[in-house]
Length: 273
Length: 273
DNA sequence: CGTAGCCTTGACCGCCCTCAAATTATGTGG
DNA sequence: CCACATAATTTGAGGGCGGTCAAGGCTACG
Image (cartoon, rainbow over the protein chains, first blue to last red):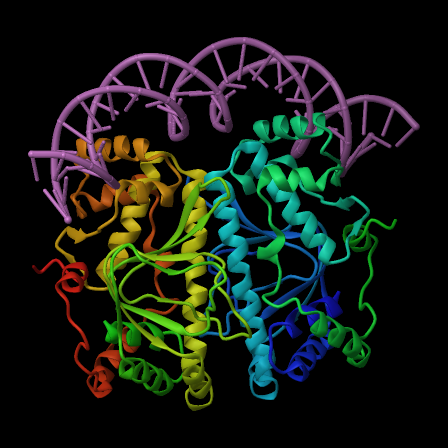
């Protein structure tokens, strides 16, 4: 998974050497394991430091005073969060694991040190965070402008595409351990109506979603009716040359093997079992 | 307006000297004037460079293939946009002026040079962009979870608060040259229903909105029913000490006077006429 | 004075919400 | 391995918020 991060960040920075340095440092850190459905951060918690998800799925969400909840982002393997190097940064939202998670992190002191040792790595981090904004905007459009069936279809297209980029799909399937309630909170519909929508999507033969396994039978039609265009997920320059460079450098990273291993994590990370 | 930028960025950086340097450089640049309702950038346009709005209001929006439009952000005096120093950055959305605009900018070469001369200025820029994310999230919640009256109330609370921070309010009033159509596209309602909602808000005596002038009669109640909490707009550390520092340094900035002046701009920028 | 765009209002309709209950997973302790 | 509790899914009936369509009025601007 960490090579995927390297490939992604390398596309955002001018000096890939710096990026390799930073990624290597991240790989050197011990990884932490959290159980499913645990609250990782609550609003007000210090947000200094960089967190990297090696395996599992988490989400960010906001709570309204009357209990309404809006999930604002799903964090998949390969995603970063918590990067706020500025003074006294704090979370203003919740971060919760949906499955068991494996997380690596860089502490503020290490980040500070990397700032001088590998400045382009820090730049790449900022750029990566900046890219998220495109996803946020797409979610706003989703919730604001699209019908129920379009919203759910669009969410699934996005998640499938992102999981595919992380190498976590098999054929037309992927593990997507979300409840219909969580989907509802993400696309701003009632769980009841999400259910009806899923039924409809399934009845039309476009996808099935049962017990946390998503099988997209007709991605093209789905993407079409949802108005999904994968462009917003990609790096500004998914250059062939850069991809080759990444491949070539991958061997030089000297990545350590997995630090921990638990059945839950493995189950969460892949479909291979 | 440029002192406001300085005060804001100084709160985000560790070295205020660097920030002063960058802001001074920005002030040194010639400013550009654009008319109302002009398309500044379209998707695919190169986004390298930093733009700073001195006067006027603009917006970002996304277009769906069938013509549906979602406004994703309003850009007010004191706001930045377009900061993407990474390679080959391009806009993936539209930026359009709503009123006449006065804009300063830093070109990529100047930004590159500032990167070494005033690194903390660049950091502060990134942090500022990062702060926007909180606003984006709040919009998603607005559109996803709130009723029509709550949405409109929340949007007005946000815009009024931001204009107040920019010193562009007088008592309970501010100029807000938006059509009901634009409000509709921002809060994801039909223009017709925005109209009914405005009527209702006015009938309840909470605000009036006519001919681009917003008068909030009951901010507290409005904020209450909208669930508006200004916290997400503020810097992580709106420190008293830092504010004093900003005040003290303001005199040392040697800001040039306004480079241009047009009736439209003055009208757009203030209510004083 | 005419035209174009925006605002306003009314009637009607449909998508999605609400409430409620039945059914099916999931998990826990006996 | 089964009994039980809890949570998630499924399905139905009815209602309301906000959308759609349409027409008339207002304002700005040439």
